[in-house]
Amino acid sequence: MALGFGVNALLFDGAPLRQLATPLSRASDDAWTGVVLTVSLLGLTGVAFVCWRAWRRRADLTEYWYLGALGLGVYGYVLAWTTGGVLLGTAMTIAEGREGLLNLPKAVLGSWAFAFMGLIFNVINLLLIVPQVIWCWQRTVHRARLRAIRNLPAPDRSAAASAESQDLPSPLPRRRVLAAWGAGLISLVALDHYFTNKRWPFKELRVVLGEDVNEWMQARGADHFESYYDEQEPSRVWTVKGQIPATMPAIFEHGDVRVFWHGIRSFSLLNMRKDETDHRIRASEWLYESQEHYSHEEGLSFVQATLAKFARGTWQAQTLPPSDKTLALTPGQTPSLAVWEPLVAQRKPLLWAWVTDGVRATLRVNNAWGVEPGDSPSYEVILRFEEV
Image 1 (tube, rainbow, N blue to C red):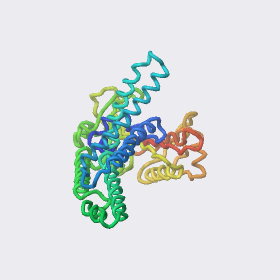
Image 2 (image 1 turned 180 degrees about the vertical axis):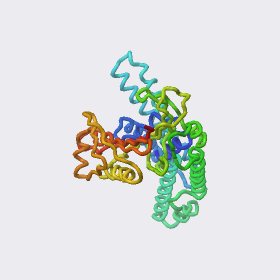
Image 3 (image 1 turned 135 degrees about the vertical axis):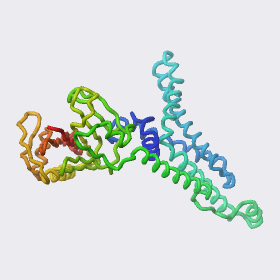
Image 4 (image 1 turned 45 degrees about the vertical axis):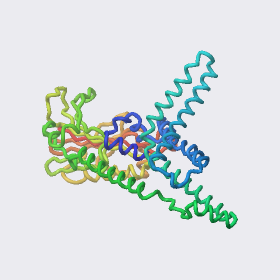
């Protein structure tokens, strides 16, 4: 699964399985999780069939062939899905009677489609695990033969020993197979490095309000960005395509003022105009989202680190008007954990604001609570800079 997601995300920008991989990475309890895990684990159901075949054939170690073992694994994988499709189609046909006769071929075709879709998740299973299981099983059979030879009478033992190799090979794969695995891993690392550098030719997302957005994007590769119109602002928005690396810093500079973040999920530039031909950057918005198993301590630590950045320089805390929908905290206030948890328990966005030399910064903390009681909190923190 890791290799499948890695190749899919790095080499193809997530396009082949974007609709499947994106929700899975966002929530471990998403409905897609069961589907993906089922697809992945069914790739190993062929192992039992493979072991049974190897036991019946009593295959000798000299007959081991990696491509043959790989083919047997693929055969077992397809057979497992086909069997599942036949059983499901038969059950549907029995349940619906004559009107459901077409359910059997439909179910089989559907199982083949799922098997094809699941190949990318079973790369490791089919290339590494299944051939290794076959090798270890044939080694076990060979060891059983050697034990049987030792229990034979002396005349029969010498005749059998001459026809049977007395060496018990290592349970590790043969050197040629290990060399192939090593070459594959080296190639994967090289491809990962190449496509990562090609995708992110810049080391940071640095923005200065007032710049021309076209020039800003051209300096970093215009194909890494996309634009759309936001009616709520209203404004034309330019944003980064795909997932931003966690190590990529977002930096805002305005005179002597400098603020930076790491681990952002999205980075947007806005012209704050309906006219899409107006390319002046008048606002920039960064979004940070927490990962799974996040705690209020971690969320508060992140917010406190951000508030500390605005305690330096020429930033002046701004008092926000009261609102029924949001909580505007006291200017310059850095809450403690004892104060923080009751605040987020009110389920209202928390706001801070600062101004300096024609620029206004707003920090907004959304969704700092779990969906259900006992769930880990899910933080969504938005930092926005705009001209005033």
